Image 1 (tube, helix red, strand yellow):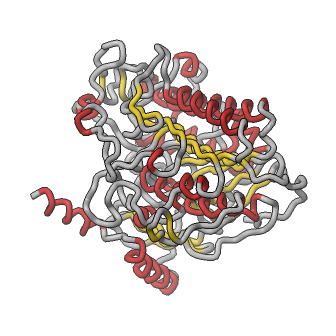
Image 2 (cartoon, helix red, strand yellow):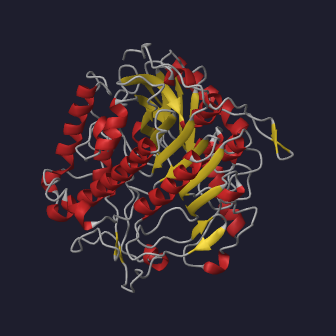
Image 3 (tube, one colour):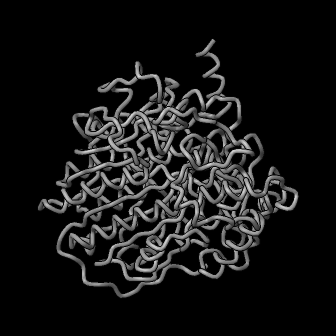
Length: 541
């Protein structure tokens, strides 16, 4: 595909920019309009039209590792979150941000920025949602946003859960309760963000806001008016949706027309053979409503910036923490134990129950593998895996004073690149030590020049590991394996949908990249998945 071309751009502002980083949760590559979706996302679409889109930007395949890498500019295992938030007692698997890293909040506040955080946290250890005896503020093994450089914050420390009744909520280091009858996380996180933006605009110092939505992570919770917009929209099914999105992506120039769509996932039935089609379509309708509501709220952010007269010198970056999620919520009641009742006392019916329509606070469902397969069209696999469906994210950068409209780049980027990019734009240096402790070097590479219309190409390979699923992306080549399977090799210029494994035809390149991975892993605190599982068994015995 063609490289990014230089374009003329507006004259630069004399002031350091405000920085807003918006993160979606479990949203697939093709789930917004400007990346091929039928879901209504006019605000993101406008920002894409007026700014820059990446077509090959990567995350770390799972919420916690991505957030750790995004916040620190390091590989997630180096920051202490190589898997999830449980503490395995190993440097790469403590489940919380360690003291060998600095966060964007810490680095920017030290360089004269105001720093704000609103939304999902999930990089601060394990916070059981309904066991309040284990909620301990000030625990170094459960650091929160206010502990890691954010002057003001409003967070859900446990990460996800009910959109209508999340727990625990913490504002500026104090537990808070929901104070309205009409609470919904996407709206509430934006309400708080708008207050922070107003506060930031009133100061002579620039600000950094990290806005982390839960949407569209399960459970399928949405307002009725948003669900109604997608009534009967998905009755043609997931096979139709995959192919229609693929065609739209080709038309937009985001994927190459020569790339064939990956096969329907082997665990997905055809739509024609699917029972309860009305219920299945409703699940996707609620998911779409969650994305729609997020876009509405991003529109509120953009409108607020314009109203305050600071939009021109504010960089807004939007992306997702992993690909579409194929997780199935069983009817065994496990999640129901965490979320037994709604705020008005109704019992929560947990699981993907076909005779129960999702959406309301008393349900707790996911949209399941076949719809996730459509969310990631045209790629293979999902969240957890490091084939393209698990790690590919849309990324939109909107900055009216600096980014010329209608830009698209096919250069390779990774979430760890955002730290050095933001620091360069802020005129700040990455520290060698912070608060008296030595800090590990940043792993990311700044793409600030790309935002200003100049050419940029990543200099080093990108490595991935999650639950034994491993990959190396180096230029046009990608080596990848699905645990516990063998390595596969793909030429991403001709086959980004990973349909033609070249490992047998080019064993030398496969061996070269495999050796690079094996050399990288110990430097990033990565240990083999089998070894980590055995370690866990030994600790529990």
